[in-house]
Length: 255
Image (cartoon, rainbow, N blue to C red):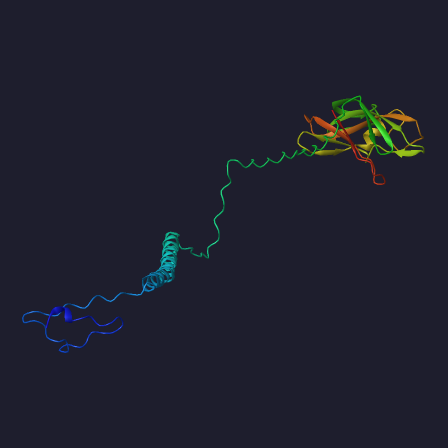
């Protein structure tokens, strides 16, 4: 049969199964069926689906990768920060900086030394010294006297007499009794103290001055007071007793 008698099947029909084609000329195969055309809408649709998949899946992957990179960065950054350790010890004192002003030095406290106690004033021969109710003035002193009185009425010293001439003045507003014996005492350089000799005072004064004299205010009496001391003794001071009934201090005269 001629080749032109083999016609292709109409469009939309599949070719007959193998072995159903009519045999052609000897040694010849029937021609291949024409290629099936794809619909025109199929390719754009596949491209759109592929793009959608890429956008959806690819975007989430990009976001995931970015987040992983951020976590890694945070981890690496945190690994570089040294760990904070807690300490129970007291905080060390902060050394002052040179910029801080130096603390002002306290002003030196002015200390005033306690005033030294006033030394008692020393009096000598000729000075007026207050002692109790009287004011005393030593006018002179003489030692080495062996006997006091006259040729017939006298008294002799055990050692030697020292005569002290003294003026006694009443400086109060009332009359007072002055008695030399018991009011005046004498001291030598060794600190020994001597009492006045009353008998020598009677013989050594023309009118008994210094023996129970009643002296009115403003009046004065001059008397010789005798002290019986060892030979060669030199008197250093004369002390006037202020009396038991007064707060006045004793008066001392240096000879």
